[in-house]
Image (cartoon, rainbow, N blue to C red; front, side, top):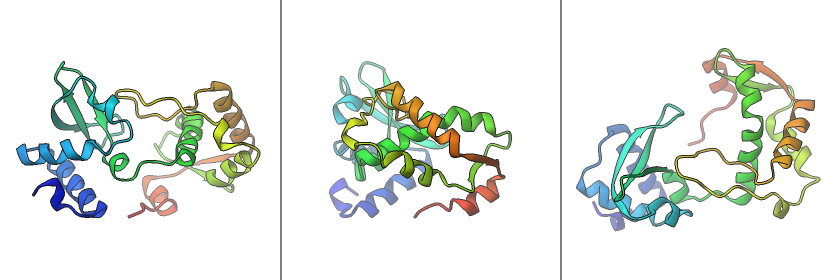
Length: 186
């Protein structure tokens, strides 16, 4: 099927999920991905000097991801979700806040999963954010093979981290407990 045959975001998303499960990209799938990447908000950065082909490999998070092999031999990853539904600036600010506390969260967990006990992350974020102006919270430009979203101004990250840590009570949980507390959105 050609890219044009996938009329909805849902059908394109299902196609991407199928490809990632198969871990193989044939000629037809390559053409599908050539069209899909055109919708990425960082299209020029991702394409670079030009696309040779697409492939699938495991990311640093342990999940299969799409990668681009460029004609100069360099490679980068890309998110099909960003192609289909680019994040808003507010979503990126929330992700930058999670990045600001990521090291603390990793250090808090020996089981691999943590949960905000008593006060959820989103409540802490909203308390911090109500005193901020969205347009003042600048995000670092996207980079090759870098999945972290971070603030340009490291003092903003430090401010959120300190604010978060003054409220947060982190609890270690098992994978099963984490999945119950944070069900996957479909």
